[in-house]
Length: 474
Image 1 (cartoon, rainbow, N blue to C red):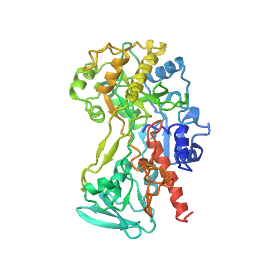
Image 2 (cartoon, rainbow, N blue to C red):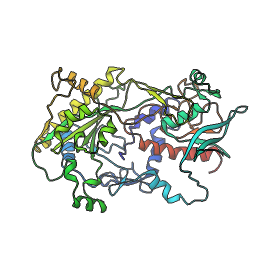
Image 3 (spheres, rainbow, N blue to C red):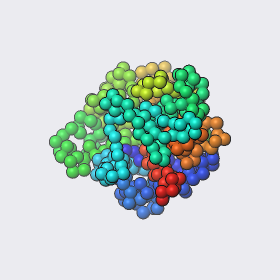
Image 4 (tube, rainbow, N blue to C red):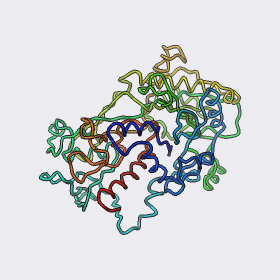
């Protein structure tokens, strides 16, 4: 639900890397086209749309921590910004793909209004297993899929378009004989086209914390148990109250000395202010999402259960580490294997630790002090040997509480034919295979400065235009 497009420099870099048509100036209209924005202070700044299917708004509910964070960040020198405009270095309240606090998904906003069209057929409960390709012409002509334990074939008049995500599309390509020559040979898959599918994988690593306590009573709830009341449930029905919050309330984009980009206005760390801490969730949903060990949850976070506490989630946007993914087997139902050596380059680790120290500095400002906010000083298990609050301590902390944000990209990387790491061209066509296109975040060539859902919508909008033009349908 967090709606962040990235930095304009991300897209200009894509364009400069041999992908014409993907500069910021050229992709901005697609972001705007998708939006139905209701943002009050930034509604008319020229960067937001009002006629699209994707509802974008602020949360109807904020704790007092959110304005304290925004004001405190401003006191450290960060400007108040619309991070979805050209200015990203700064602080702001989060923009969400919600309507009156309810998740506004692609299915709700885009599919539901058109699902009865005669030229649209959505098949649920089906599993694509292979792209059908004519070996004599290297032309895709359909897809093989299974449903109710039976195998079927869907034929394409013009193109086969894969939109199965960074892992799903790459897996389908390799199962269909498009991928690294050596890997296909190892699995006994007949090679149609040798391409570096899955050999590039980028992600946004981060950490869970730091954690802060709040000593003074405040007039809004910030712990899970106190939220579960009849009035709060009734408020939710009317699009109000704490259950309309995603609990990620505000965000700051900061620059660290460890960024791979020298531009001082190109941030590399996102600091997410969260109105709860991990131990406040009795359902263990947060533990499962972040993959936290039970011993860490019980000994570090749980002691703060049902108290006033909150945390930050620092996210590294420009990692220097590159991962990869491969097929586990030729079974299309098997999940792929992927390898990602987090912090193989220790500058990634240092950047997140620096981001944590930035968050601590923000939280030391007067708006937070007025709420009685203090850093949680219990040492994290496994890091007791380091001096608390030192740079080395926070590097240890990041290693112990490393998390993923599930922003996997670049497995079917976009780039020119001369790029040995590219799988699709600038029009998202698979190199060397006719009538086959990929339209999802797997084509994103470099890690963007933000989350990836907004970029996925933009790719879909731009791909639709390219498909129409290439097939003489417009």
